[in-house]
Structure formats: C-alpha cells, structure tokens
Amino acid sequence: MNDTVLIQNATILSPERDAPLEGSVLVEGTTIAAVGDGPASADVVIDGRGCLVVPGFVQAHVHFCQTLFRGVADDLDVMDWLREWIWPLEQAHDHASVGASAALSIAELLLGGTTTTLSMETVHHTDASFEAAERLGIRAFIGKAIMDRNEPGIEMLGEDTDAAWADVEALLERWHGAADDRLRVALSPRAPIGATDEMWRRCVAAAQDRDLVLHTHVNENRDQARLVAAGRGTRDVEALHELGALTPRLVMAHSVWLDPNERDLVRRHRPTVCHCPSANMKLASGRAPVDEYLADGVNVALGADGAPCNNRLDAFTEMRLAAIIHKPVAGPRAVPARVAFDMATMGGARAVGLADRIGSIEVGKRADLVVIERGGAHVAPIGRSDPFSQLVYAHTAADVRDVLVEGRAVVRDRTLTTGSVPAITAEAERQIDRLFVRLGRAT
Ligand SMILES: [Zn+2]
Image (cartoon, rainbow, N blue to C red; front, side, top):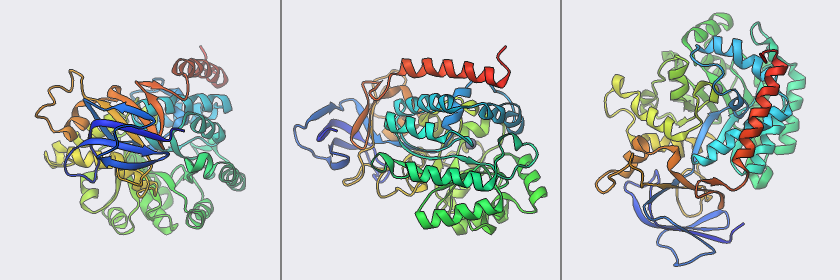
C-alpha cells in the first residue's frame, strides 16, 4: 500500500461538479485527501497532463460467471438464449471454470475503469468469484443466483430452499466484509419468479437485519413479463412489493416493461433500476424508459449484464448507449451526457448503498479513480470540446491508462498490476474447452 499518491495536472470530472476542475488529486492510504490544489510531491506521482480523472465506474448488474460464454450464444431472444445456452452452460460450471470466468471479467472491468461491480453468479461455486475478486483488487458485491422454485424450464439449476439458504449463510460468513470491506455478499434471487416466496422472505429479512443489497432481474422481456403475470397472478414489481422487497436496498436489473401500477410502486418505494442498454438491445428485449424513471426521481445505475448478451463489460459503451437510445423516442435532451455519467458513477454508488464512500471525487471518499488519456484521434480536438460529452460520446475503454481502487494502483500504463492478462485469457480458453466437454457439446 502506498502512503500517498498524487495525480497531477489533470482535468477532474466528478458528477457533483458543474464544470471540470483543473488540478490534482491527492490520495492518502485508501482515501482522497485533497482535490484541486495538492502538494508538489508524494510517494507516487502520476502525471495527469492531457488526461481526465474520473471516479471509478460502478456497474450494478453483471454476471462474472458468464464471461466465459462470450461469443457462443448470439442473435437470440432472451428465453431461447437462456434455455438453449445460458442455463446449460451455467449448469456445467465447476469451481475452476467459474474462477477463470470471474478473473477474465475482472481484468476487463478494471482495465476499462470499472472499479465496483454488483455481480450475480450461478447457483454454485460462488466462492471462486470471490477468490478472483479478492486477488485482482476490484470492489465487488457478489451473490449466488438463488433458484429454488424449480419450475419447468429452470429445473436444471434448481435447488432446495434450505440448501440454497445454507449456501448464502456460508458465503456471508466467509466473504461479507472481506478484504478490508472491499468484498460484500449480495442476496440475488434470480428473478421474482425464480425463487420461492419463502426464500424471498428470508432474503428480505436478512437484507434488513444485516444491511445487504438485494439484486434481481425484473421485466426484461415483454413475453416473459406476461407469462410471469399469468402464472403468478401478479407482475414482477407487484410481487416484489407483496414480498416486502421493494425498498432502496433492491437493485432491479432491466425494468424494461413496467406497467403503470408497477411504475407507481417503483416511484413510491425507490428501488434502483439498473439500466442495461446493450443487453436490452442485443436480446431484442426493448427500451427501458429510464428518462421517465429519472423524471419520477428513481435512482438509475448502469450495467453491462453478462458478456454473452453484450458482448463487452464496458462502462463507456453503456454510458454512450444510455445517452443515445432514448433520444429518438424522447428527444435530444433525454439522458444528456452528464446524466449518463452520473448513472455510471453516483447512480451505481447509491445502488449498492455506498453513496457516502464512492462515486465521486470528494475529500474523504475512497480513492477509486480512473485516469483517461485524451490524446487519441477519436477524441481530438479537445481544445473547445466539453469533456463530459467527450467522456460519454467519444472516449472508449481503451483510453483508460491508470486505475486506483482504494488508493491501490490496480492498472498502471494500461497494464493490470494484480494479475497477468495473458495467463488469465489462456486459463479462460482452457476452462471453456473443458466446460464444453462436460456439456457434451465439444464437437
Ligand atoms: Zn442479468
């Protein structure tokens, strides 16, 4: 751990500031100690000339365990994608393959400036994701997917309620607050319909007693939403409300098809909506009207979702799409660049209950910081441009040069310092081959 790190002569963008700030950011230990004016030297000095410094991005809906499946299940709608590929692939996972998938995810996320994630894993082997997150240095909220309802179509990953809860308890015991509180357990029933009401009640009670994040999928696909409503008698958000889950602790991925009553419930009970524009477009799910949710005062975060439905885990892609896809319907001022930046930073911080610790560059917050080079031809000229707009519309993840998590440089000069990317990708290749053998689709 460095005592002090100084990022000098940079253009600082933070969601609470109306304008860019030229200057430095001083980090002492794990914490931001000064912003703007700083000392002339420190233990480590990072030259920020020609660079933006932004808060580490927060992605509030990803699946580390699915990154190994990138590029194997494209151009399908969500139910075919799940039934034909994702559930069987997850079923074939073992500890080593989940670990390889998580390591690959985290390498990509950190190299692209994402410093905090909320990840839903598969039903088993969630320890392997925590181990990778502990080793590689990302801040992570991780939950095992809970699927104890065992209804037709999801029985291949089904589990017994008590056994599933015992797994959750073991994860809480081992990982919640680990790595100096960089790692936390999230409670992740896969969908309102994917877990039993008994399981939901246990999760809601534990979330309240132990201050945990609840994480689930809500109304992603229109046909799926109709089927759920026909089968259960209530729509997803109504079910969550009946179960007591609809609180600010809840992160609802997607939320594409909320009916007027659901929207009213969300407006009144204030869960976070995690907007996943790439996944929603690629799986042809639809457009979540987050411009309207924002107008309702709802917190909106961003997430890449899983690599097989994106196929990137890239905060820049999600910010750009979040700022672009609403305009044809709602006009050019729907989700301006500044709002997309806020979603990718403070929106995510609020989603995971860390608004007082991360999501902006302010004295006293944790030093989760990203240095972005402005020198590329795809960004020039910068002399007259609005850096917030350039961040959202022009920059790409490849412009990320340095990344700090809690003051620790996990990326320096575009190189991951906490692991070997060639070794991580080689292990991913080995593990996906082995997984396809287990799946019986090796040829
Ligand atoms: Zn998802």
